[in-house]
Length: 242
View (tube, rainbow, N blue to C red):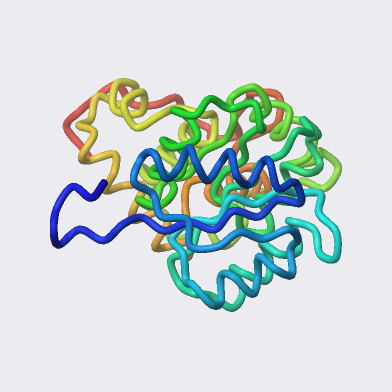
């Protein structure tokens, strides 16, 4: 189902200890033209499959024998190949798994009852360099695990010192869950300008994607759990400065 002669197929590895789940996900992806390069029944097999086939995206279960999905994710992203993204898929709506997966480097977290359309969209989204979280669990992740009040450092982490005031503002709003379109509307900037700011933030902080940016924003105290932010000024209602 290729769209053009020169366009390579998006490649994926599916890791889950249930064969029926692997088959189902594989059929969904294949129907949309996504090539499943390998399947794995545990984390160790997933790691070997990624090293062998160099996929764009890995669909990774959390609870698997031999090596769980969190450790497999950590090892896959530690030794490459560069560009491989991991989406964690689980039936367990448990917050500590979410945070463990994101800190291990996963680009997304979805529950296994996701619709076929949403699953395909998620794979294509993270392969393009974006990141995702299931909306129903994002707030609980932030409030209960991303940053504990007693561990909060005084002031901003030094890693944020290289950001401009506008970039700090964008990062703060990004961490509250706003999309690019919502950021553009809030700051009266174009979506292209917002994408440029986010790209610069990721580059300056050496982050893989938006998920890592959100985690860092809470861990550094730029944004507070519970919905509050520690940025001292409200967003500027002007479109004159990028």
